[in-house]
Each structure stands twice: as structure tokens, then as C-alpha cells.
Image 1 (tube, rainbow, N blue to C red):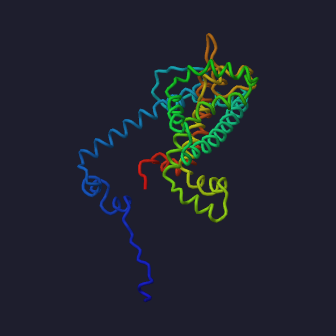
Image 2: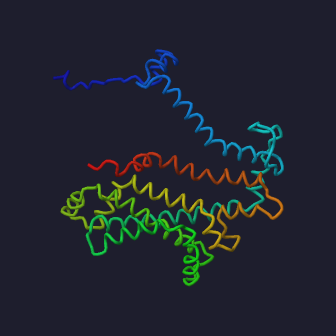
Image 3: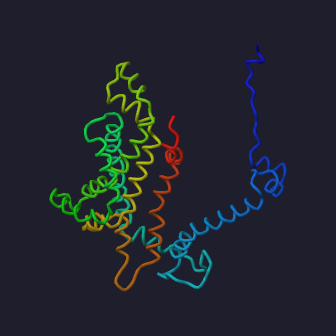
Length: 308
């Protein structure tokens, strides 16, 4: 009996173990996956080329940001120029309203993301669990709104915001962003709610939970991957938007970072060094968000592919 209770542990060799055992070239050409060496070589070359193409713009921006002055073009191919300097970063951080732009963007983006996800999660739950008149036509209408170009919505949003008295305020921009992003989020969450068995909520309600308690304590925790996708979609849309912010905001103290960076562009001269330094620094919050949400992001991107 004692032997039966003992757990049998099986150690599967990792890729590094195989490389250490056989050497890299032997592992690559003989012991790796079943694909032929020629196919693997082509795949790796393609991945290296695509990675370089993706990283090249970022490297160019980095190079411009550490050049002295505002030199945009140079004949040198060096990633780090010989006369590299951090002056552009210093000017952006301490001589510009960079922190005000960043704070305004974070405030507007975070408010938009939480408000949009809250509205979309409750609306999607209604579409998923109840069969009311107009349900199908409502879903089709929400899908149809995503086919309208964003530029067509600028004038209606501006007029409605002016009538409501929220023009030139961060609240108006939050409402405008939420209106444009909620329909797509509803479709994401509705599809995920459909995969969750109704019996889970019914069991909770039999044990005494209300419908709202079952929703917040049972459904929402199980929907973390879909909620992460919806939150990320709302965040990136609001964070990177320039056109709607340009129309809605006129006061410099309310500028978001796209408007702030655009203010560095003059009629006859543009501070390319400061522009590039600011562009690199504002990308940090988005990269942190992607890293933090990566564990939900991978499962969320495949949601709906398998329904069990």
C-alpha cells in the first residue's frame, strides 16, 4: 500500500536539456521537432526578418531621441551616435508639461476602460441570459455600429457633447470613448458568457444568492480572460486616440499626450528629439499593461474557439 501511495514523478527533458546533451547543431538538425532542417531554417530566417522589421522603427526613434539638437536624418547607421545625449529626455520631463499630459491620459484612459467594461459586462449578460423582444436586432445594431468609420462620428459627438455641456472637459472625452468602444466589448463578453453553464448561477441562487450576487461572484470571476481583452481594447483605443481628443479638448491644461506631443510641431520647425523621447516614454504604460495582463490575454484571445 505504501508503494501505491507514492507519487511517480516523470521528468520530461526540456529544450535546454536536449541542447546540453546533444549540442545545438545536432539538436537543431536531428532531434528537434519533426519538421525538416530546411523548413526550420526558413521559418527561423522569416522570424528574424519579421522581428527586425517590427523593431526597426523603435530603434530609429531611439536613435533620433538621443541625437543632439533636432536632427531627424543622418547618414550614420550607428544605433547609438557618437555624440549621444539625454538632453531631449531632460527637456521633455522638466521643461514641458509632460507629467500633466501623462496624468490626463491616464485619468481619461482608466476611467474609459473601467466604465466601458462595466457597461459592456452588464449589457452582455442581459443579451446572453434573457430572450427579450428586440434582442437579435439589438445585437445586429451593435455590430453594425462597428462598420461606421470613426470620422463620421466626430460631428455628432461634438454636437451632443456641446448640448450636454461636457465639451472641453475630460468627462466628455470619457463618455465619447465609452460610446465608441462599448459595442465591440459587448460582443466579446456576450460570446464568452454563452460558454458558461447557466446551472452555475442557478446553483448559487438555490443556495440563497440573488441574481446580482450570482453575476458578480460567479460569472465575473470566470470571465476574467474576456474582461481582460475588453479592458485592453478600451485602454489602447483611448490611450492612442488623437483625432477625437483634438476636437473635444481646447484647453492646454487638459491636453492628453498625443496633443502634447503634437504641440512640439511648429510651422517651420519640429523638435524631433523631444518628440521621439516623449513617444518612447508614453509607450511604457502600455507595455506594462500588456506584460501584467499577458496570462489572461493568451487565453482570452482564443475564447470562443472551443465550446465545451
